[in-house]
Length: 125
Figure 1 (cartoon, rainbow, N blue to C red):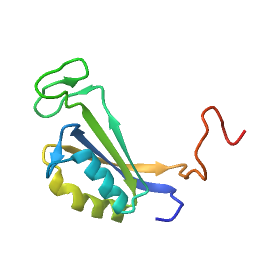
Figure 2 (cartoon, one colour; figure 1 turned 90 degrees about the horizontal axis):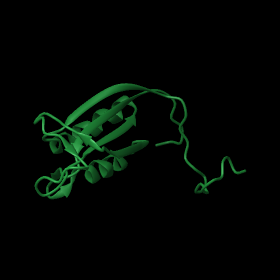
Figure 3 (cartoon, rainbow, N blue to C red; figure 1 turned 45 degrees about the vertical axis):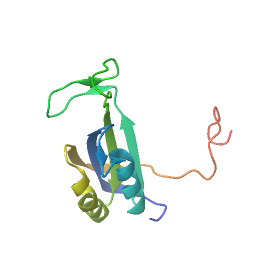
Figure 4 (tube, rainbow, N blue to C red; figure 1 turned 90 degrees about the vertical axis):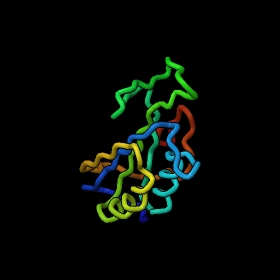
C-alpha cells in the first residue's frame, strides 16, 4: 500500500456482536488482522452502545442477560475495488450471522502521522 489514498473507493461495513467468534477466536480481531494482512489502508472497529439484529433481541449496556452483553460492533474497511473484493472473499467464510453492507466512499484526506500526536497540540504548534 502506498501512502496516498484519494478519490472514489469502496467502504465495507460489517456488523457483528462482540461475542462472535470464528474457530474460538474473536471475530472482530480476526477481521482486523485480515484487513491489515490484505494491505488495506485502514480498518476501524466501533463498539455500539445498543442494537438489535435479525433475531430482534435488543443488546445494550444496561442489560445483563445470559453470559454477556454481546454489544454490537461495526467494522469499517475502506479500499480500492479489487482489494475489497479479495478481502471480502477471504473473510466471508467467517461471517455466519452478520450483516455486511457496502457503499461508495469519496476519500478527501488520508495521511499517516510522522510522529505521535501530543495531547492538546495541533499541527505542531
